[in-house]
Image (cartoon, rainbow, N blue to C red; front, side, top):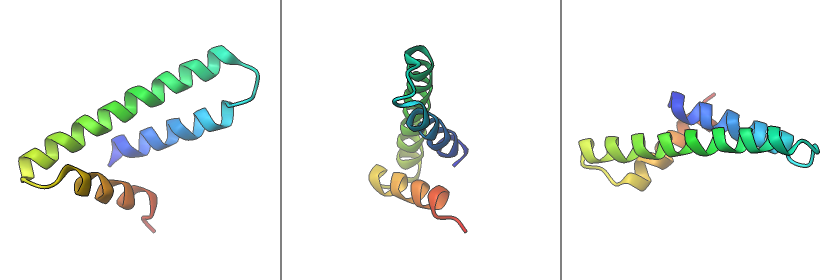
Length: 70
């Protein structure tokens, strides 16, 4: 879940930089977000295989836990 939180935070940074007129900062943030999202996908896939679960269900569960935890 920590990886998903980091990816979500990186995405928020990308959104904040969009249209700011600083292409190098936007590109760096976008690359960081992309790398973190790839890490999340790899972890979700590995966990799903280990548990014998559907990958999509694991991904949905992680996103819900991170984004809607209260």
